[in-house]
Amino acid sequence: MIHQVQVGAFQLSAIQVWDVRELPAPEFLKGVQGEHLAAVAARQPLFFSAAQALLFTLQVFVLRRAGQVILVDTGDTVNRMGNVLEWGLAALGLQPEDVNVVFLTHRDADHVGGTLNAQGQIRFPNARYVMSAQELQAFREDEKRAALFHACLAPLLDGEKLEVLDDNTEFLPGLTLIPTPGHRAGASSLRVQDGGDTALILGDTWHFAAQITRPEWSSVWDEHAEQAAQTRREILAQALEQNWVLAAPHIPFGGLGRIQEREGQREWVSCGQLFTR
Image (cartoon, rainbow, N blue to C red; front, side, top):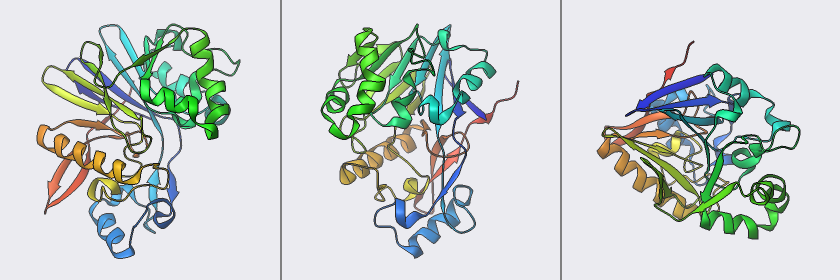
């Protein structure tokens, strides 16, 4: 399934690579209480099951403008994800060789695990890969993810395919690496600006739509929960005031949305259109 939205001259597409899953909120959100969860579920029912489980998925985002093709993260390993990403690219008329840039938001397997194909070769051979300098250094030092680093990042470094960027670097016209720390200390997002429009393509700043209304609810995967909550608050304020498009890889049904405020509470409003050939 693919959803799309226009951001100036950029076309932003979301390729769903995982089926939607149901996760029990008390196990995956810190500090959640039943009555508060019920209130959020009533406000955003599309993103909850009938039993108030959290709906969760994974999308990979593709940006296109004037022959440029930018991929944001690579999804999970080919062993776990199969060729779903290739099928999605093909539906858009693209092949892996067409990708010019791969922007890596952070060091989790479901975001950097797909850098290699099933044959162990670099999956997007004509692309330059970019990543936050701080997050790359943290990845090098992360003993828990040492195997992931050597499997997925080391080949890029060995092949001189990986470019490290400082925070707030505009590496292509209209495309800027923005620090969004919390889930991981060096996590970053991609800001897209063109023709007066702005989108922020996130890593794991949000895992669930419930965190739009309750940004203080950090997920169990956030390494720095308070910092993650503060990052969410800051983005929400800007996105609401300036009508940004947010692209969140784990929010179902495309993960493309804007923020609205209703009765003093903020909500996610999906804005992506279902892609059909």
